[in-house]
Image (cartoon, rainbow, N blue to C red):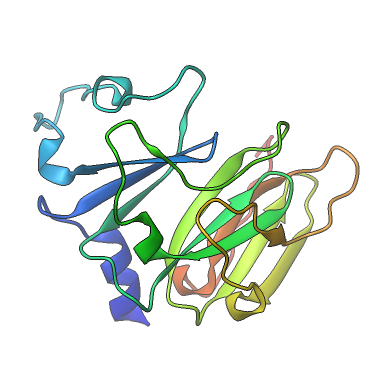
Length: 178
């Protein structure tokens, strides 16, 4: 498990970086295409590197070395939908982006994780509800599908976070007012 976690967060200049937006699109670039900056510089705005649509914000960044047959992208939306798609379906991303998930008008993509179909998924809502389930309970669907219901939500509640059990033994929750 520890080796797998390290793989997820370590990247080098030859890896692809996949940028997922709140509107359900995915953009991709090589890590070396990001301009190098000094330790104290402010960096480069993402809108200068990707051709984002108006109102798009980055929800998740996934580093990928190669597109393996046994890996999936697991996505969660604020309305409680969850989607698992083989990572191979995202191997050809155009410069202008690609639809990663189909969303309803009032929904947004909040989180994306790379998995191997052997993890537990934890969804947490703004009103303090939480659910944990094994990702194999979520059937794999195509790239442009909406996904399946991951959690039933009460009125005005929404999913604010998705974590995997490989990210540590404890779940730290911090409220809006600390």
